[in-house]
Image (cartoon, rainbow, N blue to C red; front, side, top):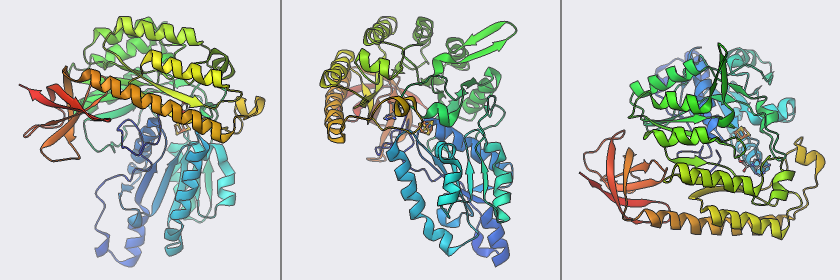
Length: 478
Ligand code: 5AD
Ligand code: SF4
């Protein structure tokens, strides 16, 4: 589903995101009013996965209802929130570095309140308040409704913390304040938490048990998005295939939810992330194939190509099972793009296991992949039971091999699109030139094309003429 990527892939949080919103003209206020006004100006930086991006929008909505305004200028903010990620050690290191970098703001103005929210808040709890003088409030992912109260406590000079996890909280009734820049595509959270116990993963510990969101509230949010001009939603959950809503003896599955969201309007594209290979059903694949507006792209993290490592990871499938699911996708949705997550250097991984990962990737011909070095997370099953015994140089060497193979596969995947015609949803002008526009195919590939006079949110038909390593380049067919 996830993670930092400097390239600005819309599907990911790109490091930190200063959030844009018009802030008041503070220059004309008296010093006292200025301070009061500043306290109400909030700046949010978001790290980590798409779920965190969606959460920051919920946080902003809660704060806006309590008189706070968003600012994109950190120097103007009275409240600075860092929405954090714990998935790998380097994600946390990056946030410690960021905290250090904003220390000077607090030195300049002691009234500023700094809050650490999200997964790291959950993992490190009190330690953050005790060891870092800079942080005033610490709020876990299920306690955002308490934020206004906790900020008020911090304003009165007390450090404030709430990291309680909940079995029910889904923020279903909250209309997120949209902070994405393009106004065309948006995330919609459909569930929270995770019940899978992948041995390497910290998510169940920092985000708690899995709970699904009321489908009515999901539909309401999707309709509001469509009515305000959005043309693409991505339904988010740690494992969307286990979405489940019980009502009147009926169980609403993810396949049904996806179908009713797709029925909101044929002009609304629907994506989803993340699927789990052990749970993705033929029913779901058939639903995807039936609706033109359900995008033909599935992110199906394999993690490893070795059945022995998959067992140690507690992924609950084998290499053969994974291949079976890919075969089902290929036969039910022939034009479906596939992406994966891969981890190099998990505990005890041999060269043979690593070769199995490479051969699985080659066999599947993934269009895209997120690739990571294994990072031991305290408290996880792997940290408790296995030794992190693969030397860093070997993890790096294997990761580099995985990356260079994926570069080759991604290039093949793009080259195969040259000469074909795709329906593209326009996202806006391209970075390269104002006469060029950029959009995506249903398969989630970026297409750039000359598009004078075109508007974002429009669908067009594009003939692909050539490609670079990252982009398809084409022309509009009238
Ligand atoms: N080390 C490395 N990668 C990890 N991921 C999750 N936990 C870890 C870890 N401890 C990767 C997995 C997952 C993605 C979200 O992050 O590939 O699918
Ligand atoms: Fe998202 Fe997981 Fe990182 Fe939390 S730890 S921000 S759930 S990726």
